[in-house]
Length: 191
Image 1 (cartoon, helix red, strand yellow):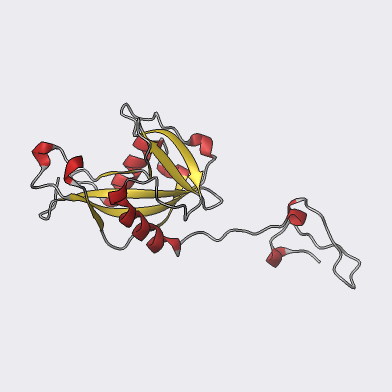
Image 2 (cartoon, one colour):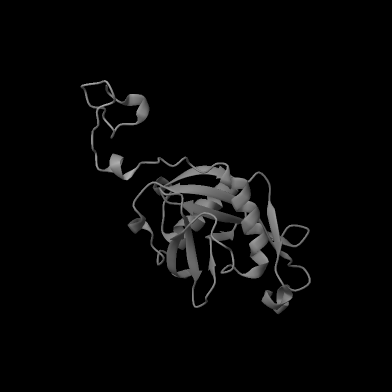
């Protein structure tokens, strides 16, 4: 299904873990890494396609993630002729994508690259959000940068805790005999 300009409607998925690292999948039998993505079938909304692709490519269900945000408009990239099947040349130009930012709400052992009979990835890893894009096929890099940039403002805030706080130590504030509960968020600390 192509639009009148020769672009196939598609969705892209930026999947975050609890540390705001992003999921990268290694394309099967290649050395290139990418985010999950896939075409929108006739009659599907972008959100329906995103959840279908999420299940097919990484084995996650809707209840395993929280939708954080999506791009406002379609982001497009053209595919070089050498990557286009001969029978599609002349009318197929590339992909137009709606990108979704999702946060994983279950442990990452829920990821399953063999959830479908035609796996897309043979390995995966977590990377920093702003990892350099050299491992992404060149013609997709611009769209990746646009999607990451647009969606970065929606990144969940990270709770910063020092080693002292992680150890659950308690301290007495100056001039006080009662300890402060450093394991509770600051607005709920007991004094």
